[in-house]
Image (cartoon, rainbow, N blue to C red; front, side, top):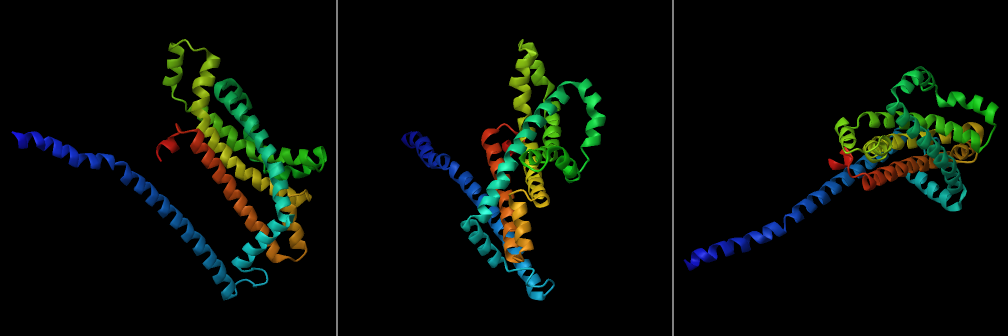
Length: 286
């Protein structure tokens, strides 16, 4: 009997380390998955650099027009440290951020209104479908005539180009809200305005965040394009100036910095979205 009484105790003692260590394998799996992801990214960068150097070595492009990857990175670091390229980056961010903010507010408001007011959506659909396909670059001459050269024109161009993914993502997010949630709020005697703020808006935020992330990249492209075409301070005009000066390595270095800036912007939006919207489907699946 004594051995039988001690058996469960020994089994519990043997089982307790297993239960205590259940979190360790999961943590190790996450670390391993992160390491694999990082390794794949590093392998992709290495393959891109190797391809770049192979094109130079085989003579497909004149080496004077295609500097080495090392010289491009070195020049980018020097130009950023000297301040010229850094000031250009700050100038671009100075027009990109407020332009994207205008697009976010206007696009979210319009998307919510179109989703909640079907008659408004029907009335404005022809106008939206006519305006949306117009390339933003095609409106630069019109913007120059009406607004002139300056920050106001830049903000208009950035907002016009980046508002569409925000508007339609927000609209889709509101329309995809589970009707059972809204009906539950109605049963609980929650007013229409309260249902919008407490049920509809939180449910559509992940869709809005996706549209905002897409719009951020579009806004950055348009901001740089406008700078190149109008000579406004920023990365675009900096690229044009170094190109016209014959500084090929400096031109590639500024293009490289532009790519890094775009990557950092996307990473920032993804990080904020994961931290602030844990209820989104994408974050729950991680």
